[in-house]
Length: 251
Image (cartoon, rainbow, N blue to C red; front, top):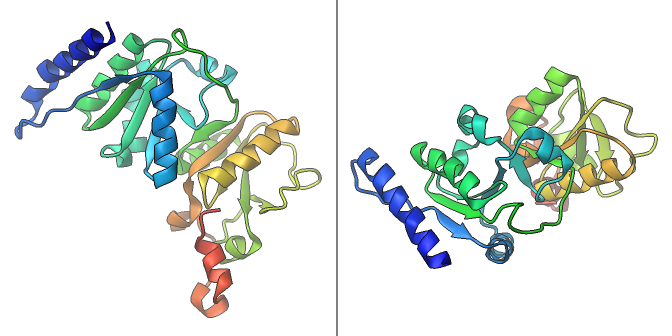
């Protein structure tokens, strides 16, 4: 049965998208089980392969609980947001929703936009997943959300990185101490950024555990976005050796 379903989806992709390409490139959207999904995630992490997880359910459903590191792009609005993740057009992209049939429709739309490595993951009606409530977001969209909603921007980095790549108008939480009490003021929401998604996620989880709401964390390394820096120091003149390694390390 699974083989027939997969073949049917491949047939659909061939029929729908081969005429769009002048180079006869074939893009296949693969259905994958929950088990295979977790295996692929582990492999990506082990080998440092870039990947993106997209939840195409509604915003309210996403906020009630979602797969760790998934970004919410509801199916009825996903084409409005593809510019936000076009840098993953040639990378692994996992898509999930309530069911394989639902998320496959979104995967088809992404193929039309040039995405080439799409995996359609068994949905919430078909499997039980561990859920989280901290919300992943791309860094540019996270900063825009903080401005629009007047959310606090939380800078979770080492003191060295914070000083070398200073971002103004933020709340600084020192890595790795992660002291939230008496450090982070009340806000209607929070957007955490760091030099790695792992560190940003760690801080976001701690904020939720401390009772804060509407917590987002950025998947991107802030050092790659110099447009947000206030005063950027001449790092090589100020820091040397281990401190330079710390600035650029994946925390």
